[in-house]
Amino acid sequence: MKKDAILFLIALIIFSTSAFSSCDRCALPETLRTTIYGDVIGFNDKENSHAWLGIPYAKPPVGDLRWKASVPPENWSGTKKALELCSECTQVGDAFASTATIFEANKAILGSEDCLYLNIWAPRFDADHIPSGNDRLPVMFWIHGGGNRAGYGGINKGYKLAASQNVIVVMINYRLTSFGYFSHPAFRNETAKTFDNTANYGTTDMILALNWVKDNISSFGGNPENVTIFGESAGGRNVMSLVLSKEADGLFHRAIMQSGGIDTYTIEEAENYMDDPSPGNDYSSREVLCNLLVTDGLATDRDDAKRVQNSMSNEEIADYLRAKTKEEILGAYKDANGKYIWPPTIVQDGYLVPEMSVEDILKDTTNYNNVPVIMGTTRDESKLFMFMEPKFTSWFQLISGVTEDYYNSYAMWDSNIKKLGAVDDPARWFLSDPDKSDVYAFRFDWDEEGALFGFVDLSLLLGAAHGVELSFIFGDFKTYHLSPFLYNSANVGFNSATRDLLSDQMMSYWAQFAYTGNPGTGKPGSKEMVEWKAWDDTSPGAGKFVVFDTPQDGGIYMSSEEVTTESIRDGIMADELLTSEDKCELLKKLFQASPDYAEEMYPDNNGDLCEFFPY
Image (tube, rainbow, N blue to C red; front, side, top):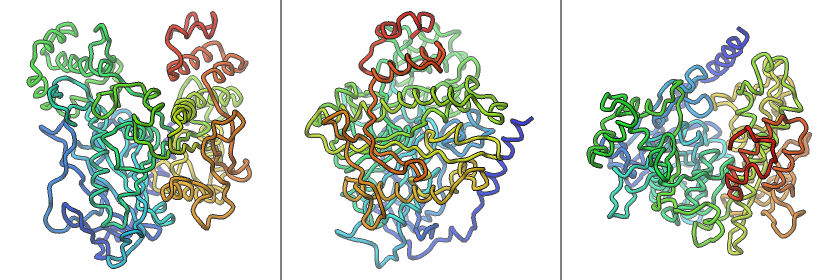
């Protein structure tokens, strides 16, 4: 009952803060702008900003355009009112990354395949005073997170960042799940080197949206020659995929990857059968097609489905899959327990993403788009996932308290593994080529959420968890639907003044990077800002990354704490708070995340400890 009561209270807080006045969305003549596709009109948003929501940047990818590269939209006549967010792309609800409530998470299928729209926020300028020429403003192009399976371009809002830092903020929707990432020969023309041969349809959406910015953002006061792409979680990984893709060359000029890194899959992993000599993923495109054939009664079991599939022509397979509803497609990704299992995303297709390891690509600047980059993580990345895991917490423990030392110890090692893959390893790979542009890194340490309802210690359970920095980057602690849960002034121990100061400082660093490619001490006029220096690989004690926290917890400072596979391995093995199973679980994650270790090296690095914990 207490669990249900807490869920009800959280839902009530979120619902009670979600309303807005309809007059905030009145089309205003001073927001009339002209694009190459037609005129759009927006509205006055908060913080002295203008906003244009739901502008189409592509034709709806439906019918014959499903599983094809996105294409530009049709022109329109008249003036399009850009006043409302459009539907998120088809996905299964996620309480953290989508419009789903906590009661719909991992159950409801949300969104539409007609979803390729973007949103723009800008400082308020009337039509006669839009910046032009050299006065045009930097563009900050946001790619949302959500595992490439959830999320949308309106879950965060860009008004505060745009207005306070004098930048143009663009946020996009892009195709998700198997509608955005799907590799099957039925959708490839082996004789033509075209975008349609990609497996990364979501990436084509991002590239088309960047081309839209190149062609149109000047009308909004933005500079198409100064575009910073930035994103968090899967959005950060997508930023890295654009850095890797030569097809995006010249469309952006700086890149920020928050909790990113990148995991890529080979064509074989993405589309082969599980029992092929080069085995595919359990939910590769061929395995999913087998599931559909069995569900439709066209095959009796998997073996029969393989036979049927192998007898079908590519045209027959493409027609069969394009005729399926979104519910039927996503239903093929459910396991025996009804849980959704997600397919490979970001495929080394040889068209948008090179058929090389990320390490090999980054060690040579001629392989990728060599621009200044920022990479970073949160100190407690793993706590967002740990606090929902029965292994670590029960609802009783959320109220009475978890075993603090053990909880923090496991979180530290697991979060360091994520930092290794998202920051430290890529930084070293980047800088192995002396021609690399500057690399900047950060760690976000703020953990002052306080106690929800006076007894749920969010500072311990979540702390500086995955995604918590987003509200700081956008200066918005109200409109994200979990904000009232995370940033409630009624939480015991919560301090909004120091939170807001840190947010202002972080926005200033991000904007200065967008302006110049060097975050430095933030934008001119920022008070008492520490210089954020580039990653220095000249010696172990040199500064590597900046730490973001409030003054009472150390403030903002440069740190030289570098992590390696070996340092994490040795620390895990020596940690007396961890059980043997914990150590094996963490070592498995570490070796799977590190390109320096192969599966056969796993037992060599733990002695007999993990004999009964398979790789």
